[in-house]
Length: 118
Image (cartoon, rainbow, N blue to C red; front, top):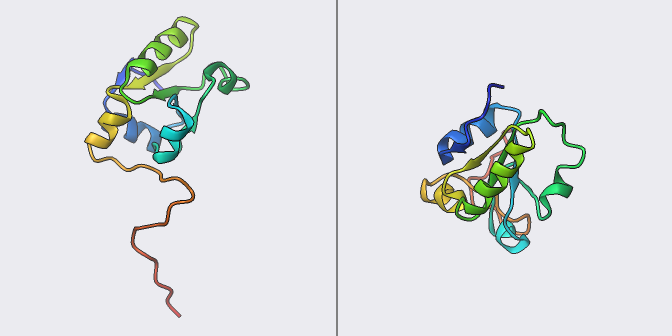
């Protein structure tokens, strides 16, 4: 993967997540994460602990509520040599752009049902 830009628009982040090997880390608290999160995102309550065992060259995408916390964390990680970007505007911008969220596992599925053909 080529070098990540420092900041990604939500749609660009979605495309990268869908097509690339980037790991997505959500920096929001447990309750915010449970309300809905970017598909494939892992909750990273303790960012340093979440990065244990993650290869240094694995691209990272960080997201938070509004992009401020993830932007600061991304900058710190870049200074340590990590390839990392953050989502501009955070989950607020993601939702504002109408992009899908992965619901909490306890929520009922509200999408179309598959029909079985016999």
